[in-house]
Structure formats: structure tokens, C-alpha cells
Length: 231
Image (tube, rainbow, N blue to C red):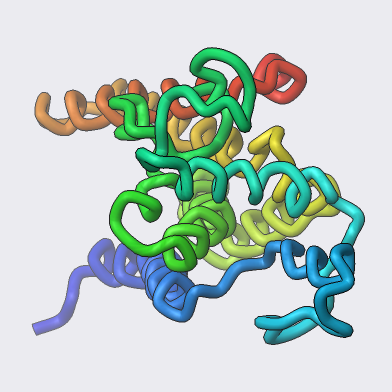
């Protein structure tokens, strides 16, 4: 029996997200990340060269990642008890809630990029956090471009790669500004908003509304107005 054209198109359209999901899980399992935290080996003069590098070299350029953000995550994980709402090492009050760090708080339900810290050990959790930025951006913008390009898969793939690996995105990729998370949330909000107004079963509209709510909360919790306001 011949497979309907619409089904064949859907199967082809699902190939790119499926590949991204497999690569994401593989990167988490292998504990891969792009952090320059290995630069501490040079900075502290503990070793002549950094350990754990598979390719490339640690870059001092975005010191706010390896000198501030990654240590902040570790400060949360190694605190006793772990992942507290208040951590004097990170600031006064409940400052961890304003940062992209794991906290034992219900708001983490809306921050899937941090779920890995609750499910795995430190390295796998950090790999989840890092790769969620990459593949979340790739998949969400692929789906958005697929709508904008009226189902032209090749253009959608080229579009999402162009956005995800543009110089501006890559410059801010690992910074405390959380640009990849904001863009992914923004794309999910647009896609889900479109679904709400489609002629589809009511339960699907409810699901889309829940997705909008979750993405909006994640977007707001990124808490960096210079990016949030233009978006």
C-alpha cells in the first residue's frame, strides 16, 4: 500500500529533530560540553596543560562563563544541602532564582535546560545544560522556519543553522545573558500561539496553551531585559 504524500512529508520533516534528539542524548551520555572551564588549569598553574579536552583549547574570551557562571553552578551543587534557594556565595537573598543555576524550587519545572542536574551526576547534568542550549535552539527554530518556509525542509534546516551558528548567537552563547534559552522559549511561544488559533481538537489547544505558559515563564526567568525587551 502506498504511503500518503502527507505522511511521507511528515516523516521527512521529522528526520532533523530526531537526529538532534539522538545527538543530544549521546552528548549527555558522553558528558560532552563546550565550556572553557579547563582554563583554570592554566590560570592556577596546576598543570602545564588542561585535562579532559577532546578538541580545541579553552578560551579566556568569555571569562564570565568559566570564571563566573560555571563556578556558580558548582557552588549550588556542592552546597550543603545542595541546590539551595539561598547561597551566600552567589549573593544575598534568593539570588540563585535569578540565575541560570539549579535550585530546589518549583520554578525549575519550567526550566528544562536545568533538569539534568536533578537526574544525573554533575558532569552529565552539566552536559545536559550545555547541549540543551544547542539542540533546543536548533529544533525550535527548525520548526519555526518550517512554518515560515511553508514546509520546505532544506530551507528550514539552513535557516536554523544560520541562526544558531551566527556570530552574535555564538558570542553570547555561554554568557549569563542566557540568549539561547530566551530564543528557544520565544520560538516555542510563537509556534504554540499559532497552534492555539488553528482548527484542531480542544485538547490540542490546551496543550499548546500549556506550552506557551511554560515557555513564557522560562523566558521571563532568564531575567536579562536587554535581550527580552527587543524579543
